[in-house]
Length: 413
Image 1 (cartoon, rainbow, N blue to C red):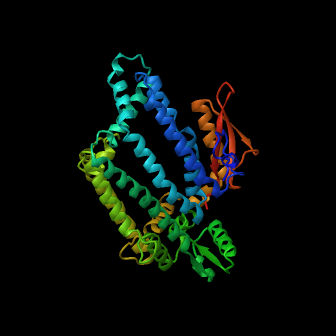
Image 2: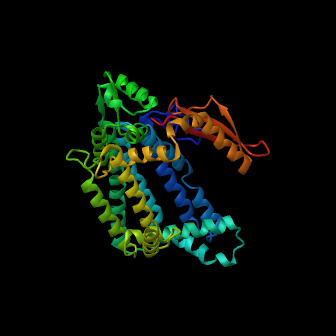
Image 3: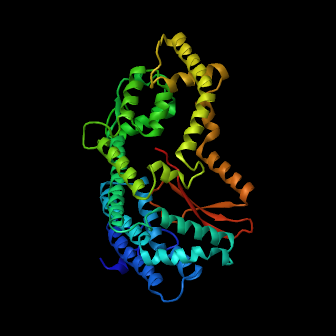
């Protein structure tokens, strides 16, 4: 394919969704990865002494178009995926992993970063520049820049395999979710369900050329069914199906993948000098270490468990008095919690729904953004989107200066 005919090659302000075809992605990634490597080479090949400007800043802006295209692609893979996109993702992810390692494990590049980092106290950097420098140095040092010999190659192999396994895990869960449906033909099986869910279930059935109603494992279908359905056996059937996603004896089984990911993460952490993957991850987070997390959770457990046990006993007693249920199961919790809430507080989520229509929620969120940050949102209908349910807005600051385009998918089915 001619690069000039690929809408993903050249920089763009707004994603040209109408022009993008699946066949554009792989050539675009190949081209932009090569371009990014050339940009990195410009940093490492220079004979000029490393400075914040010629090393850290240039590194920060390298691969900008690749980042844009990656964001577009993986968002589409999450929100509007199909088998072809998933296959492309399996090809692209190892390529991106390899590029990341090419950059992080580049001795000359890290040497330049380290030189600037060691001089940071003598540099007149503002807060943003100091933060960027610290993040770059830590990112490189935490992800293998200090490794020697064959350890770097071991890291490459691990990262490549992890990138593929994590994608495959998500694909399996999605496939299981899409494959399951509970087809109901007896209207009595809809007892307790709100009218909105009945209508949605009937629409799904119609789309699948079936009579009656279809309940799926998608949250807008699954959650209200578990909360309102009076049919305990159907709640059980749905709950067990949800819990079995990715862990059935079929091509979408994730058991081996989960075990492999855990082992590779542990091996990677050890390679980088950390006892466990948890130590590696938490080092850069508020908790700081697994030990602090454990202490926090144990403290929380000691305070929360007595209250939770009391509430559970009340719920179990309520279920027994209401329907003669002696032992609450996983598929009972949401249903009886909703019933008890309605009894104690005269509160029904379905009755609150008219006050939380999508339009009202959007207006509320925008009003909060305006009051807190001085932002205003103007609806526009001339921007390319990947799906008809995506709404787009121009965002302006308090001086009425244009800031950006805000897009979101208003469909939750």
